[in-house]
Amino acid sequence: MVCATRLTRKTDDVSTEKILLDVSHLNVHFQTPEGELQAVRDVSFSLRQGETLGVVGESGSGKSQTMLAMMGLLANNARTDGQVLFRGDNILNVPTAQLNRVRGHKLAMIFQDPMTSLNPFLTVERQMTEVLQIHQNASRGQARASVVRMLESLRIADPLRCLRSYPHQFSGGMRQRIMIAMALLSQPHVLIADEPTTALDVTVQAQIVALLRQLQEDHGTSIIMVTHDLGLVAGLSDQVMVMYGGRVMEHGLADDIFYSASHPYTSALLASIPRLEHADDELQAIPGMPPSLRNMPAGCPFAPRCGRADSDCQRPASLRLVPEGASDHQCACHHPGAKA
Amino acid sequence: MPSSTLAAEPERSPWRDAMQRFRRNKAAVTSLVFLILITLVCVIGPWLLPHAYDSTDWDALKLPPALTHSHWWGTDESGRDLLVRCLMGGRISLMVGILTTLTSIALGVVWGACAGYIGGAVDQVMMRIVDIMYAVPYLLIAILLVTVLGRDFYLVVLAITAFSWMDTARLVRGQTLSLRQMEFIEAARAMGVSTPRIVFEHIVPNLLGLVLVYATVTVPSVILTESVLSFLGLGIQEPMTSWGVLIHDGAQMLDSAAWLLIFPALMLSLTLYSFNYLGDGLRDALDPKDR
Image: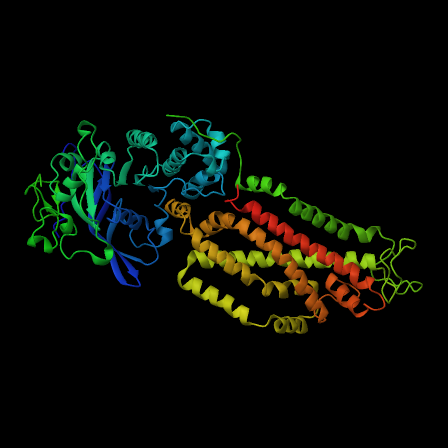
């Protein structure tokens, strides 16, 4: 496999920066009545302290399943293989009790829909203090004090009243802030945000993104931002991984992806972002539909929708460095290049 | 950043919302008041009345009800005061009803929630046990229990519990299956919350509304089952009594002393109606779609 090459940040001294999360050759299969489906194929990446990885792709690209696999949250009919090293320890396919020592503690996750991510029958206090009671053996009082401090630092007005309330009394943006506060309580090293702003208004989205950026500066948390919105990733990420059909299509530093995208799918995604300066142009939609897991093309999964596809594309393309000899920009395409 | 967007009044729990809706339902509130009253009367009444439930008044055998003598509801063929016997019977029937409902609901909730949440082979085994329990004829087992262990109030509770928890288990399992797909359960797992804690602290509170409604239907059915057992001589024994026993005895003297049937039957049916109306009211009040 070619993808053993690790991405490194150009500007930083590699030796001093710890690799927190190291995923290699992760595969996710689902057993279904119609046979086995592969939702994630040979995904590898690594994340250093304080770094942000943007994972971009359409629905069904396998980006969420990759994250759920890392958190041990896949459905019962899922089978995973590969390796997920979190601070040197494998956390893939380990018993729940062992996983729970890091899950929610050093490796936290926030979900897409804040409207359904909080238990409607428990007060916010009970849900928030639970994390500290479990992972830090904190007493009720201590946990409560930390929660109040956290809510204050997120500039949530009247934290005490907030604690007494039930989830349905809050707006979506507030609930997502509560979810973020909850995920940050035990000061995780890595925060996985699975489409954290998709269900929110645009103005609230901007606030949540600002909040995440602030947190990263304050605590040095590493973030994995899963989204289908390249615009959201642009301002936040150090590295960007583009996924399609369960595979990594292109992976590189954010600048490489945005300014010298080499995979036709990445270029197509970039062309489909609305831009204010070209308000009159029609948006460049990608023709066709993403392939279903049931009939994935034998070769490159993007080939049926790709302008550059030819007979080569009937064979699967593996990740290769682009341009050849580069250290940190990989692309899975038989015809890589800057423009279609 | 905008500050909080809290609703006007704080601490509006889902329970408090339900309470408000419940209070607007007159039939349900009346039923609740009636049930509280009848419980109080059954508990306190026998101490205040001049007659004991098991003492015989030889001057007043089969005395019809009247306010002119001290046996307001009349007496039975052995001259025992019917009013005090109805109240004592109420104590037993309500106690059996409530105690058995509590134990059977508790067992059913734990069983169903565990089976539904853990899933897989555990679920299969647990639910097959439920199926087997359904197939066992409960009277047979009740007779066996009583023959082996003797007659006892708690044995009646145990026997009825053993054959009434399966409905709750199935109901709760179904609800748990849909709850475990909810994002807040996934979020709890992502927080590193352990499996027992998820089941008992995150899933069970979400089941309580459903279970509460179900409990109000279970109480009447348990009271009726107790009557059946007593009727067969397997439940409460003379001179102690229950509504079931009184109705059974009264039915045999319908021609000569109708009041012996009418009074206990009236108390039992009013209680059963009240539980059903209460359950109706609770169901409407706890339905989150009905705001």
